Length: 285
Image (cartoon, rainbow, N blue to C red; front, side):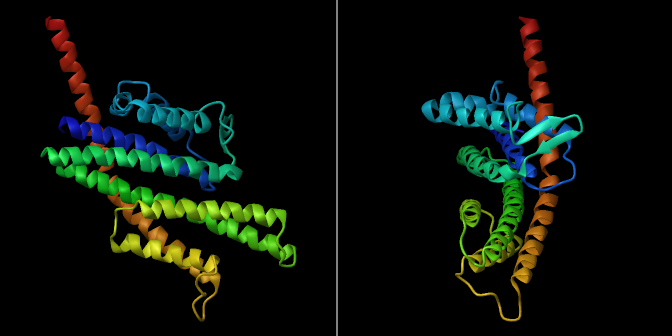
């Protein structure tokens, strides 16, 4: 693995931790505390140590400082004792799903910003004939997996909130109420974030496009821009979207697992070797 490849793998590693924060928007009986600790360690410390991400921020003046502040706040909001979203307790992690949208509003823009930094490095490697085939595969697999996880978590929130919205309107005999207005605002935010995820996607394979088409069909029916297909109910539309997104998650996760762990292990081994060589050189002086 050459130098620029090590930088790219390191950046992908950090961005995967940002992505995996979306786990806490999904209802689960329990959350793995060890995995939380792993994410916390990476999110908090990678921007303090002399990592490629920290070096990039240091070299990029005001923009680098802005990103550093965002990442520090991200760590504080979701991976510190000050967090009101995710809290450690004696029986494991406690997650406040009432703040799901706060998680989305942080993860999605930060992930896209880090993704643009990764692409800068990929383009540099390509222009200098240093782009290795495994890096192309890794970045592509990571891109698809992020889109899948984002669609899965955001669509889950969208359909849940839409159900709550309809319930609130039914209880008010079809009238709008402060409660339904509040839910409507949240729905608008979720749709906006789904649009952000779709807008920045570079994958265009059939498994991806099938999922995004099914999801957007549901969104447009919810917005009144499209009618429910004849002979179907809205529940059928949701089920179809969930099935297509599920297929995309499975396909992209399999491809990601086939390359990501190996690349991380190679990075760790390369870094260890570099440190040993540096120590030997220092000792020989």
